Image (cartoon, rainbow, N blue to C red; front, side, top):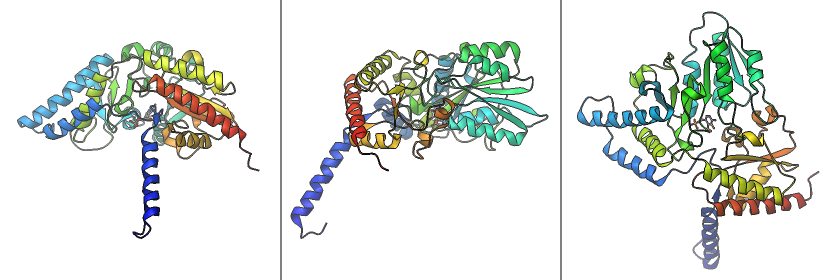
Length: 402
Ligand SMILES: Cc1ncc(COP(=O)(O)O)c(C=O)c1O
């Protein structure tokens, strides 16, 4: 702004400040994409970066102390998941954990084999599973019901003697629908004990208690940033002594299964997040109930996706006929409500996701996902529901473009 135009300059500055103020007070309801880092996690990580900078593979005292911090977190995770410490492999997050689970267990192809992957898996599983085709593994998709869950019968029909891998996630990231993982694992354990069962628990960890044996998972994947921890760290946990081959060369870290210097601050932050955010869903269930009650009262035309009896409490996806998701999301953001159109992985591309396709949600339905965390307050949920109602009403009143 030229110095001469004093009043214009002042107007621009005032405008800028009010925009910043407006944007700094928002209601964050996109916790399935990522959560806000807990302040105790952030300060713990900052201290770890300063004090615990040594390489955990170094054999001097500083290195040994960094290694101890990593092993403490491994022990804590193993005890929560009910597996052994050496069965926890740290990775750079859920995506890598899923890739390691798939590609690290099914390597050299000796004869034609078969893998089953549910139609609603996260892209990190779907895309990696497709890579198996190069290894002479035929990959088949398991359909889901309109309620968004995998019927165990669909798995039973498709299992073959040569099926080496089955992937069914625990909680779907777009709809929050909990999958009947225990029932499925019970069946495969008795009929196809050689088939490995991969359960992506990225969206259930922290909300639902996870016992790897009770779930019947051979491979279980987690990510820290969904539970108020840092991004770029997660793990693959093993339910039995499965051989996991490294995906690239390098050092002997993580029992030789994941070479590369460990992300010590990230791992330490993961451990702290687990400690400060104990498993619990009561608060989330209350928020979810309140939000849905208000939405149902104000917007009877809204449709909550997924079987209501199977939904986890922290995610609710609402469909609105005739309003495109992006239009609704932008309008909500202008009013300070941050939500998303489903998976963050394709949200920006504005596609009708593979999950909505699999559930046969018509394309003219705009879908918005609201996801809560333990940091979300009741007041925020009430306000968000009010804003949503007024935004939907105002968009309905807009003249339609020809
Ligand atoms: C179900 C599910 N699996 C895997 C991932 C990937 O985890 P990360 O972001 O740690 O790579 C996500 C992230 O959104 C997810 O929701």
